[in-house]
Image (cartoon, rainbow, N blue to C red):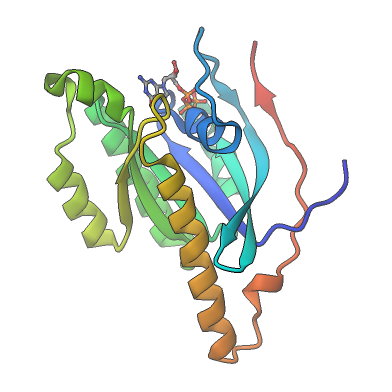
Length: 203
Ligand SMILES: Nc1nc2c(ncn2[C@@H]2O[C@H](COP(=O)(O)OP(=O)(O)OP(=O)(O)O)[C@@H](O)[C@H]2O)c(=O)[nH]1
């Protein structure tokens, strides 16, 4: 496999089964996989070029395993990330607690990582509002408190998924431009990271 230039490392974090892999599948392959749930082991990597104005920004997306068994490993994957999609399941309040945990970790360890708080499985709410466990405004308040952007998505319908990744690429592009114009000597747009496909899903 040839090395690919990656502009920005993005990490997916969140409790197991919140829908991290499904978000990546929807965004990259435009599909929603049905069938038995397969938990991620370790992490999986995919690179995705995104058009931002006249530029192409390639995001290197690390999809981590949500199981607490792999917590130490997930820490390895968020190192150096420019963006983290911290997922919670809109129908599972415990997943929001787990999201808070990851936010704290990132705040303590990854100063330059921008956080995107993502409430998943919005289609379930659309079908039956009574299954919602996380109020939109509570999550929005939390996002504002931590300086994050907040999205509610559905990988099943595709709702807001493109918007989430597009926002990341655009924010990254703006930040990289800002760094360059401030003449810090760090041209983030030219970072060359080569990654490898790391792991997979169990069968
Ligand atoms: N209805 C609905 N189900 C979803 C959605 N996203 C994920 N799911 C389901 O939720 C389950 C878990 O999805 P995954 O994407 O594997 O979750 P994950 O966060 O990657 O899980 P781990 O690999 O264990 O960390 C699967 O059965 C998916 O089909 C969604 O947007 N809507």
